[in-house]
Length: 479
Ligand SMILES: Cc1ncc(COP(=O)(O)O)c(C=O)c1O
Image (cartoon, rainbow, N blue to C red; front, top):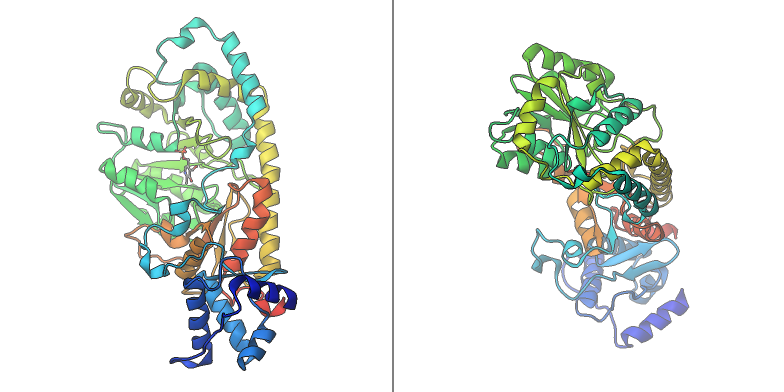
């Protein structure tokens, strides 16, 4: 350690000295001095700082004063602390003050993150290219010529049949091919359902925490969304009133992570029956469950009161743009009318490729493989936190491709900011909050563990642990 400090000292020039002056005591003075040294480029990115004891002795301050100053600068994003490699000047810290940057565009997003821990995207390196090509080739070779003419807006029958079988077997969905309409994904399904003159109208109840993108899409379609608070059993469906529909993520609440409790699953269907309303079930990652028994689709409770929505965006790739709606009978014609006379959204050859992929068992094999991989990632996240940040509680880990890390109160914003400065892209829970809800979830980070490639994942976890609030981490003191 001493050696590396000597090397660092040589790298940064022998004239570096820290002057502890100004108001606020020794700790504040040391923080200011170190921050200035980084900002002015006297301490360059990657430089390893001296151990607490050495710097404390050099400056004539207490060891804890140095430890506290380092921890504060890690939280601010100027320094990084990693077990085994000490405290260093952050690679991404540059001579600009954080305050000089615009608050909306974080450095990680502006430059492209070093570590992408945003929820949303599956591991792109795991797309099953060979198996997909096999299915695609076989499907095209066997396809009749009419496939290459204008398509049926309901979607290819081969795909609707394969989905009928798969969804019944894997998700407990009760349907038949005539009640399935293929679309380009969940977002497209929402647009079709709430199209002008479409089958549904607002107000639509939505979970108080969810994807802002979906709320915006609905607002653009003139649909008012009414936030439904959440608790440990999922959406509080007892609060539903005069809305015409409710949009839920029952298998794995997005983003907080729990399943909708069994009594609420039946309660929401009872509400829909009593009020002539409808439940929209977003089953975005229902295939990825790890620790608990499979949670089947709510749709199975009443196929005439629930619209089931799914896509390949989490299981295969969001680039394919393929999804499906399983509709109550009374809505089929209206949705087809909203779609138009011809298939204009989902490539018909791709539909045939997916039909073969499902029917041949390749989809099941891929999902099983990915389930194992993501479970491994989830376990590594939990283990890294247990080792490096034992005071952080991890929730929502029984299923899906993301977890929620509970943070000490009041630390979410600064942690997201510190992460951005370290090149880590992730979101705090607040980013998902409905603007009109009176509910406030405890501080937390939504950590997607599917996106980094296998070889980059360990470094992403270390970087994540390095920016968690000092009180939650195993302090650098125990290095
Ligand atoms: C909550 C939620 N719903 C649905 C989807 C799927 O969206 P789409 O099918 O439009 O890609 C996602 C993302 O994959 C999601 O996070």
